[in-house]
Amino acid sequence: DIQMTQSPSSLSASVGDRVTITCRASQSIATFLNWYQQKPGKAPKLLIFAASSLQSGVPSRFSGSGSGTDFTLTISSLQPEDFATYYCQQSYSNLQFSFGPGTKVEIK
Amino acid sequence: EVHLVESGGGLAQPGRSLRLSCAASGFTFDDYAVHWVRQPPGKGLEWVSSINWNSGSLAYGDSVKGRFTISRDNAKNSFFLQMNSLRPDDTAFYYCAKSGHSPQLVQGDWFDSWGQGTLVIVSS
Image (tube, rainbow over all chains, first blue to last red; front, side, top):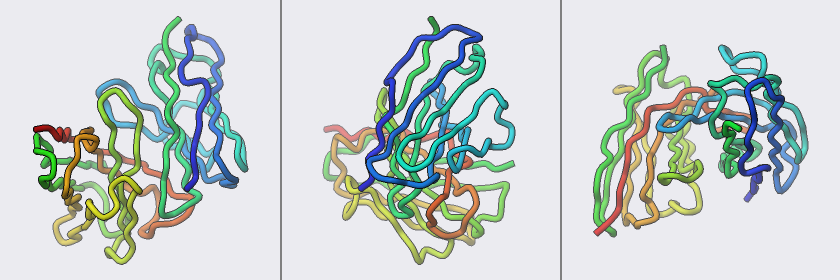
């Protein structure tokens, strides 16, 4: 099975900061990597698919990059509504869509 | 607008069964694979199960394999998760989700729409 890790597990940042979250796969997954945002009490929301494609309606301050085993989600200028938990998900295996453990972005 | 609504959650005793439903609207249901994802309170997301458009391809996470069964009824725009032999560690919010682009279980898929979740508590 493909294992996903994320770093950091949490971070504190201020409005306007540039924030980078890293996701690593236990084996190469090409660009089969998705990113989701989840706010407390809400369902996850798709942000980025196929490592770098922005989902319709998602602000352009969100971007994704990477391939193989190492991926990043970047928020170019953190906004108040971006404080949430972010999860990566691999879709390299079509029979195991595993998620990373999450990164919580908190207000400094 | 895509809409997914889960139902069927609640309290169950260990070893008992529960059946979750997800009612879909706003898209051509049998054009897409669909999925279940769960989240224990205060913890991360865990993929549970997936089914392709015609029920010909099913997939399960290791922690539920042999106990849970996914199914769908395209005539009713609904899909289901039959959960048997429930354990306390099955306690979680259960979300249904829709494939981003494919009727099959394919490499490179994503989950582009989610329901609001239903809570399952397994406790004696």
